[in-house]
Image 1 (cartoon, each protein chain N blue to C red):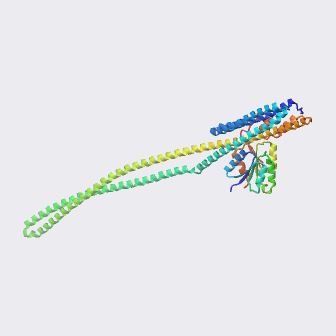
Image 2: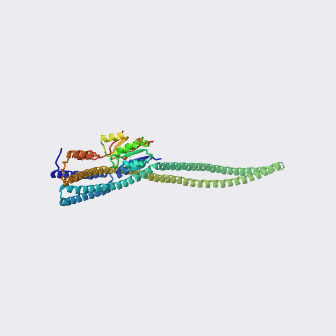
Image 3: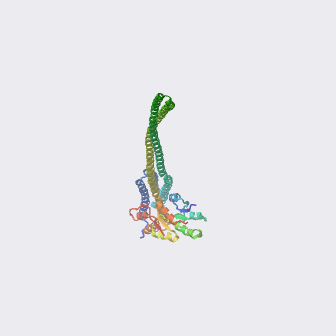
Length: 394
Length: 122
């Protein structure tokens, strides 16, 4: 379709360029906002707020400045332009171009800084989680060490119990010895009694030997010897009784002391068992608490790392925004070139050829690189990429 | 010894995101701002993989890949195209130039690392 380059058509073209330019800028800003909405939704509130705030404010300031200066420039150009809209376009389009480029470059600078920050956070988290994973067996090691300690202490207590058992057996033997010493004491008493009776018999024998006179003289000698022997036996019996009593007393004292120590040992054993169990329970509780805390830290760390990873992915929107803005700037520059050429023709008195709008639009469409640009061109709602696309392998 | 990957993209933020992803996985990274810059940085350097944008000033990604593949030292160097372009026609151009994979931005780091591990030279 061919159209004549009238003032009305020029105005229509201007409005179209303005709408396309500002519309794409608006879409880019909205796109960045949507990206950060996704970030906020994913949970990085602070990082998202900082990033969104910084970017949004920079972009808003730059765009507001662009619009303000464009309006001022347009007003000045309208007042000063001798040729009307062509002159205005010649002045305004380069200004718009520079403003858009300023907004684009500021956005890119901020995005690089943000990407660096988030990348650093991502790497630090990865290092911390890697450190935990490398030492992840530490938890199992501590538990194993605790179990081993518990086993060692149980063995030690078993050894102590065996020692106490041996002591108890020794005590039983000592009690048996005490019983034997009582028997020995009784036997020593019997020996003394026998000596006394023997002495009485020898005395009677001596009396009977005296009655026998000369014939009993030899028997009297024997009776006297028997009496001496019985006297010695009686003395020996007394000595045995005395010694046995001493031994019996000593043994009873030893038994009493051993029984007292046995009670103390048994109490000490029970106290030790309770103390060891208590200490092990405290350690076990501490290890379980640390393990839970470490596990929670690991889970939270992974979640934050995934969120940061999502933020980094979202920050890639800048490349698409930059391409859209650059393509718009290129088309504005193209229009500026055509207008300048037409002004030169008019100044030289040459006829100004009409602009083929359809061809212009077709050429514009051929320079698009993203689906959003195609959608915007056709007046459709732009479908910004919500998630990473699949990879095509050739 | 770490393997080396060349990143070619005119967007500083994309170079940074890709570089960070690859460095985090243990790769060495060399970057270039466009196809012309990338060609100047080849210089006989041993490259195990190239990740290139398509639309760049001075020299676009498709032209760069064609010129790089024309050099005997880089004939078999695998290339991943990383771009906002999603049209089938552009993909065919990339395949014809010698690319082995086509990734549309934005990319997920895990997906990129998976593609790199599949294609990178031993």
